[in-house]
Image 1: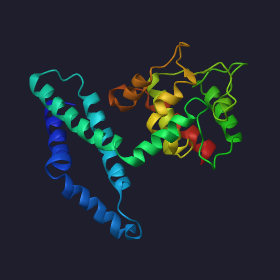
Image 2 (image 1 turned 90 degrees about the horizontal axis):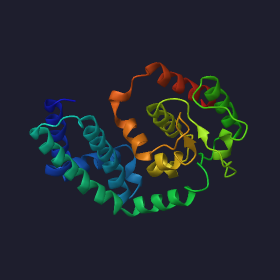
Image 3 (image 1 turned 135 degrees about the vertical axis):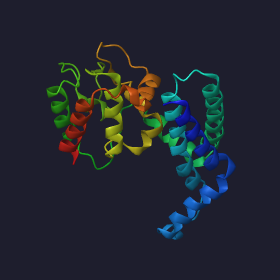
Image 4 (image 1 turned 60 degrees about the horizontal axis):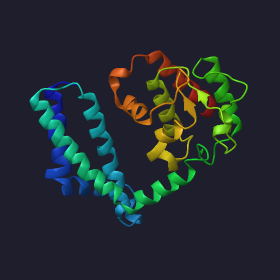
Length: 236
């Protein structure tokens, strides 16, 4: 990302989230209303759903512009983090957000919860394909199914590829409705409790999250496609 692109992104977000927040939010509510939303009451949940993608978008922009160190870029990034601060405060004060965080924290230490419709036996097939394609290391004392059913072994699963692909794996499970929506806010923190990196050392959840946003790390398109194919073969 260059300075011109950064300025453009900031101008657009400032327009949507600061200068004309109510107008843009109300437009989204009106679209939802005519698409069947008239059956529901407008609530804080609507604002939560509206704001969260923008918080993630600002995160993506700030990470991708990390290497822009000139004074103009720095000033824009300060303004962007200010906008993110304001909308994140709105998000964290939202009662629906608080309820979901509570649900997530209740499952954090036990296992990685799956969506109710996922058959645990499919995890065995997933494990076979991940081992076959050298995404995880096969050992006698650890197995993938154990981290999804509250009967985990002490030994973590060893991820055998780069950190970025570990983040891709986590997001593919989420995007395909395999892991429970209850963990969406703490997914990286949760997954690193059950996996080690290719060197056998613990992952840093913040670094995993960062790599997921940093498009410059996407240097292995073939492996990304392979992961996508594995998920589709097992669950779709």
